[in-house]
Length: 312
Image 1 (cartoon, helix red, strand yellow):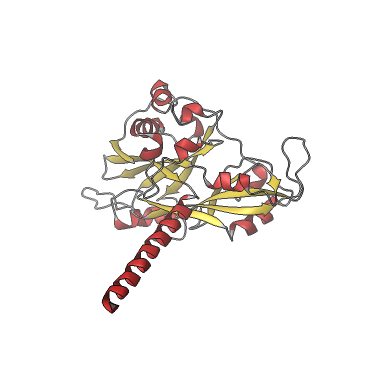
Image 2 (tube, one colour; image 1 turned 45 degrees about the horizontal axis):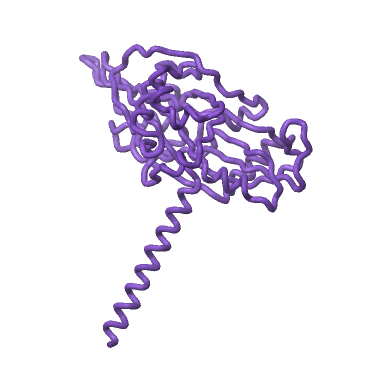
């Protein structure tokens, strides 16, 4: 679901952000769980060949064709991690962890800044003519948010919209809480949010918000910019024994929620702001595949029956 507004002052409230593991900053912007000693190489290799994934589409805006059909993929890998442990306890035999990554794509441009510039129309000027595109975005990531199964199962995977899982009032409350500043503490967790999201966020033990820039059309010289298809964020599950896939399957059914706020300059005096709440779930790809196989089976049976009818 998206919301369209003209820039206005938003009331901000502090919310504790998730901690970042500095030693993996070049690979991701947030992480949960303990990392192996050779974490970067291990994770990077595993993320190149995910064994389960699901992709959803979303429109950054509808101002141009290139601002539509962006993609968010949640990918999972089963990573051998012999030194994985919970707190100070010994790791399970032949320990593994489920590695989940967020990857994004867009129609054109090698990195997020170029994609933003190419997909944003020029600023309509006055006598001087049009100006260079001016658009920025912020992505709001949840840390530690593991929704109950009954919430996750409600999500309609035919689109990236979260309304089916969280409810319209909750989605609207989240969009209202996306702060004007791209800062983790700028998410407004007020009474309206708590009441509207009582059945989803209200049942979580703890969770945090991590806000990060998600494209700047005028920043062409930035280094360490998100590349197309590159992992933006990662999450580690609790360790488990290699032959026990319960935790991995549980992580596959996990509902992932992100917020996105996009600001674009229309002319010399007007700006346009849009907010989105997007959902994704790895196990949704299996449901889709099962449905396709079922449809193929029905088609095959229909063909056989038709052939028998013609033969008779």
